[in-house]
Length: 546
Image (cartoon, rainbow, N blue to C red; front, side, top):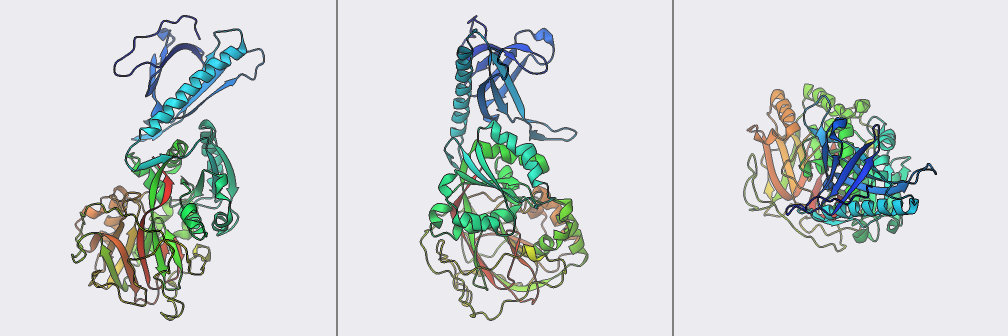
């Protein structure tokens, strides 16, 4: 840093907190002035004639960390500090913006004493980190609090998810981001189905500040249900959950990115976006839905409950997993070629005005609720009350057994499903019963995305306390259904004015299939086919979101 202390005048709008002159390291060593304010770090070339941009402004909201260090060269008396930014920049060969890593490294050498130089580098590094922390604390809206620091994450990674590249993506992208942010982590690679479920069910969660899942949505399903199977479930489910997309669906990761207000991205760009959000460490509340099956299972769902076309595509497209997220497109086209119609009974409790009938697009106001979290008996029936469970569809010989959620005894843990009657009893009289009994699909959503490129419930929020119920009645043409799914990419499917499409916001629902064969999924996982009902529990879990 220069001994010259000529500082710029303070601005009334953005006061200068620190000023210095340093050598910027890199391919070309350039001397620059550095100005730190509450919200920005400005790098100004002292010799603009060197070419390139003379002034660059970095927003501290885009910074994940800063560190000071000595050189490995023992003859170098200088010290260094590096700041790590992930600003939104124009995408290469594509329109729109995506986060891209930028490292700015500065050499501090105003003194011949290495300790003095290191202290000055540490002073700048500490000041930048404090301003970055202040930026996080200024976030408003759904954000509730910040994970304590320094952060320690337990990362669970499924090496077989998606195209099987999750581990390579972690090492190529995420590991460096965690290092940039100064986050300690323990990585566990799952070895079998329900490995993560068993691990979190027995783990000492006090060792970590958050559980991070790098996979598709299936591994998070295991983790959520493992936490809810603990005797201390009320405390365990408050453990912040982080999500890194490494599978083919990545619906929750896409929803988290969507909630941040940014335009849609995919693949590694989505991973970097979610990694940035993870490094920020801000926590939002997350709704969970209790799902009761005829087999006396009670599951907890963070994403969706589906029957018909959507669940058929999800399960039957497993054989196209090698193509990644495109498997859903391939599966959709295959299923359109032989469109099925399912018979059943659908009933639900609307968020407002229970006696009203659903319209094409329900515009009811956001419903927020805080539900009691006392232990009680579930509203699932006891074994045998409904007779045998209907069989999963045999129409597809490609339904993999590995997708089946392993049956478990009815959990006595979790909040009371006080809106639900037992499955062997009629729904409450004030519920709405759909008159149509022939359906192409029924899907209940609690997040915005059904897959990485399917914005199924644009109005959904992480903790709105709402099940966004969409069903398509029989009679829709293949062309109209294809148009519906194409429009879903940008969330425009609810504005297609298709008379066969119904959307309504509900708090609870029941589905009773009449067709003897079919597929029902919870969070994309195959479950027992038969009567099923669900109730949302607002803000039951916590999620790292931005």
